[in-house]
Image (cartoon, rainbow, N blue to C red; front, side, top):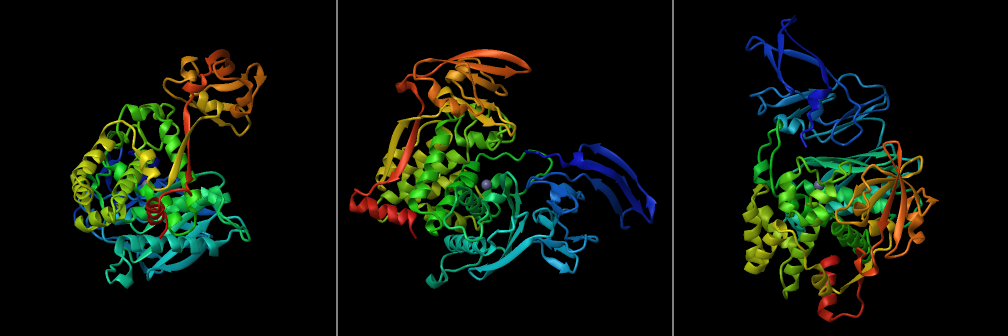
Length: 544
Ligand SMILES: [Zn+2]
């Protein structure tokens, strides 16, 4: 998405020799200055900074955070020159965290504009800890943690993930094939908030946002679902340091900040990253294989509930993402309009990995990723580079399958593949009321069930229910969360729903599907009774 950060800029002034220069605005993000060549030019402007996400800039009395894209004007024609950033006086006891190389006590340097805006900064009073992974210095900075946050535990977990990923891309030193990551130092900037889960990757750091309740607490044992989500997020953004920040779609070799940069390859760069994020948690022993399968089954079921995937393949979804955002939950029609190159892309990676591994002594997706890394020299990749590598490792038929999986809407052969890895796939009718009706809802903070999406061809769509409706009652009984009403209506029966829309009360009748028409949910489980080969394959896949 083009973010138009220019909307936050005001009071732009330019001076030379202490005298003002003329400022002419040419478009929404370009200003032309009437100035003399070869004479220092001083610009000043204000930026409104109240963006709590990982992509913008934020400042209040307790905390500052910025991405350079939100703050720094780009001097056209001078992008390639070294840039120097100086921080002014900060409030007492505030610290600074960033991966941008430090020049002296309060200034930082970058080789060019791209690098300047690729190092976010965290400012304030925060928790910080360090570790080394494969000899590389890493820092973890956490803002907003609860008092019982177990920082040592999160450091140790992050270290395991980072070491495994460095070895994944560069080999183990013991095998004599070690190269080092392209970064000297890596920084995780984690903002722990009340509610949220998001990350943005950078060349030597990542900005993360997570619920503070997802952080490990001192004395806690086991990994909660929220904690697993945080570890998956950390693993995902770190993997991007290779897969998209360096190895990247050829269309994104250089980035034009002023307009959309189209690529059809996000199914690989986001989807395959999404496959590896949780996979590293099981390979490092942070999650058990059974727990990993539960995460996988959630993805399988989520993808199955996206009618848009029958309209377009993930390559087209990638191309369209500038206007049909794959991650957007605020667009109610997204699941009907587009496939998810994240979730479905991760299942394509799974199908490819298992297909490669199935052949005896076969290679794996790991082999393919390293092969692409070496061939691209950690740089631009085109679709045919990926297909060529698949052809060489897995044969012509597999390359043709991959092309079909990413371009044509259709089903992946996951059930058969998983069976060869001693994983059972059981299909059952979905038991939730929202699923039966083809709805997505949220429960508002003050109570009340709100419709966020109505899935195409579902019972709710036929009943005329619309995104934004509030569900007040089901079968004449008041509901707060829709699922409370799950047992009030049977299969193949009429479901009377009372709604509020635009301040008016509306009645709708939805026909509940018969048992054989209900959406299906899959359950994945480890199969104990399996052939020796299948069990061995599963170990190879999930255990390192
Ligand atoms: Zn990503």
